[in-house]
Image (cartoon, rainbow, N blue to C red; front, side):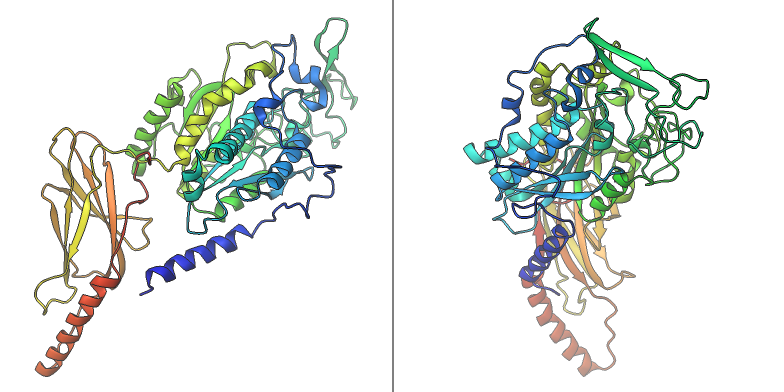
Length: 546
């Protein structure tokens, strides 16, 4: 049995190794293609948008050109993150999780207090699966800036960065974003796909937006570049990244046709962007994650494939969705006029294969159907107010939320059998819980060998103790979890204790019996003193930490 300090040391070593599986940026290894002649002072996003203009008649991104105006394009995001990394190295690490089709780096930012080296919870945010939803890039950058600014100057988020590693991927689809100034319709990435099957990839600019100086608005030019006789038939290629994940891939809500906006790709994870995010998740243990989208104001949870919630965690998801609704005042996906079914979607994959409580937040929506830019993104002078609206929901999940009805966590006490002839044949599990409304409480008891996957041991236990008979239980180390319910609502509070199980002690002769019994009696005392471990941060505990 490893001592407590040995376990903590092992966790720290594992986290250290995982954090170095992907390359980091530092002042001395800035990418060759990024040129910063002289490093400027870091600019906070609210200052960058301080003089942003209001509505522009036409497609805003076409008017602004490749820079995207006040919005951040890929080069600006890259430069901003490099300066951020070099300005606040004690709180920030910027690194790459992979490359796109056009060899752009997919940046990730880790926010944590580097001086605290103990094990921490992990949480991540990803933005811009879809190119035209650029407001999500700003939502992600605002989250980074607000956390760092208020930690540096007011220590407001010291508690969070000392206990949590927050990862933010502000632009998953930089290739698609790179063409918005001439094709603001772009949703997909830029996978080289021959949409019209004519054997050429050179004709994908048959439909191009431009700024008409005579009308002072955006306009569209359509051509027949490939001589097919059809004007504007071939558009930029690409795969819908949010239909390319390996959960229920190729099912309803995704298209097998390459021209369609929801084209799911040739096979699951056919795209370098989705593979990069998949591998990133494999290298971490996230409790929560959020994907940011736009086009409507809504909150979405698995399952995208059928519109229901996962049965195993339905009560937890329901409680968390209610909290997010209260924070954002957004409807749930199924309550909107959209509510369509999807497959190969990020949230379903993250939950199904990585056990992450995953949420999609649609951060902006409007009734304006006139222009693509306006439909998916607010006017530039409204960007910061939108980011301020979204921030509390992202912070809520970053704080590893837990919901509770009780005044105190249930306190578990495990007693060894009093009879020395019954060494580890059973355990008496006791707990104390109270309810604010004096409702009658009942409990469920769960057992786990890893503290992650739990099996039900007993349910509807109305008293405050349970005898766990170890007959038939494999020897080993186990976690016990007591979850208490008020009878009207879902399981709302848990705690855990780790113990060892040893069974089937065989006694051959009387003197052997007394020797073995005496030895195990002594060892039981040592065991009880040294190896019982209590923890109050258990998976599926939902209350906001103070």
